[in-house]
Image 1 (cartoon, rainbow, N blue to C red):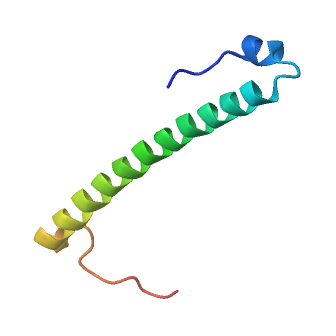
Image 2: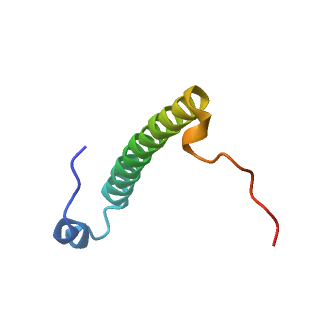
Length: 67
């Protein structure tokens, strides 16, 4: 979905239906961006967990010690 420029939003005056349609369109765009970001994070997590299970010594051989 294409975003509507700020200039067009300011043109919308009393037409509440168009104003809400534009707001819904903007929120759908943000939702699409967040879904894409979540997918990227899931891929990174899957990659890191699979690599740590295959070769656990690459991260840390000893557990953390208390000071």
